[in-house]
Image: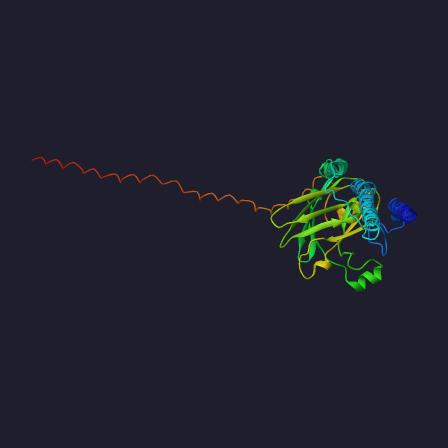
Length: 325
């Protein structure tokens, strides 16, 4: 019996070592993964290109996964040991005790300590997600059934629609079907980008695994997330909330480009640089107003002729003197 128990312990230790080797080897396996899109048969999380994703990957691979693996192996070892050591054949006379104060204290305190350790890293990661630096620019993403609308308020670019790229065009361009979009979201590398997320009809979700971000798009409400991309490239995501029959046809394609290329793309969309004022519209010249012709002077009124002098009255001749006798 003793040799059998020792053999079980040896196998258990070997299994533990193998499991831990796999756990700590996941980052190396992930290094061969495709960046910005899923890799068939890959193990582990998608490689990240933002500080947030690096922090989330560390929390998962270095904190959660080893703790979970150790707990699972420990419990499995206890179950195997109990089944072999205390079965009816090996232990025909069971013990009569039902409580053990030391064991009960241990299985109460140890989980508390484990959760405390996890909470420290968890709260730090949660704080990082909400501690957004001053954004260089803002993008608004609106979820529709079943496409995305993007708007660049800081660049003067109104909303444009992004649909799934048809399968034949995706094959011709050698891009992944159901991930490539007709209109990508273009952002500059190395600049904090704030994304305002909302929905127009039902609940959607904006998610890009390589960035480590996901935000619900709720009608009537605006959520926000942020990211800072470390290197140029094309990164894919999709809607992560079941939103109807065409839910699978809502891809998100993000292109991270240099600042010069971003400025050129902005100009091609009729926008302007971040912080730059839009070009003033040239006012149309007013129509020439015809010259006002002054009213013609009234015809000169001839001076009224003075009233004709009344005809001089003939003075009556004095009566003839009477003839003298």
